[in-house]
Amino acid sequence: MATSQSSVTSNQRIYMERMENVFLIWLNNNINENNADCNNTIKQLKRVTNNINTFTDGEECIEFIQTINNNKVYMIVSESLGKYIVRHVHDMSQVDTIFIFCNNQECHQQWATEWPKIKGVFTDIISICEALKQTTHQYEQNAISISFVASNKTLDQLDPSFMYTQILKEILLTIDFQDKHINQFIIYCREAFVENSYDL
Image (cartoon, rainbow, N blue to C red; front, side, top):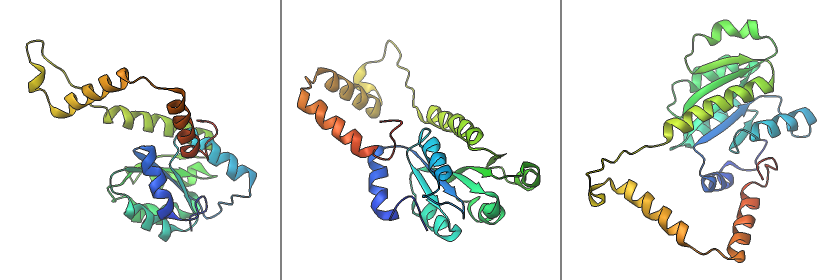
């Protein structure tokens, strides 16, 4: 059961509005939102990415992953569910990276090396956050498209997506934004990041 959201379908719309390309899934059968440590962990993870989904049930987690079409999934899996869930999700194209979160690193290190998508076995959330930042940064860098234009090439022969980006940039730079527009944008940001006071 998803514990950080009341319903998967109602929150998918919000996540799509944020236009982030990565979902973070934390699967742990002991997640308790009333626990201060758990809340602190979620807050730390939200400093890396806003799209965090917590699950206590492996089957529901798998079903959720299957609904994701155009985004990558990073998973944090607790030791007790590790071997079971990795076997079921490792070959899913949506799953990009898996982090194992456990109390005994040596115990899980050996089997984790058998799965290429597992990027490490961690005993504390700070280490996971650092690895997650690096992985997310690398993914975002790989997603950035770069276009080179020869000096002798006319602009009407360029790739349409490049031209549309240039036109959009010019339009945005010429708009005279008023205070009401800025206030509307602030309201939107507050709604979009309601659960993430760090980014807000």
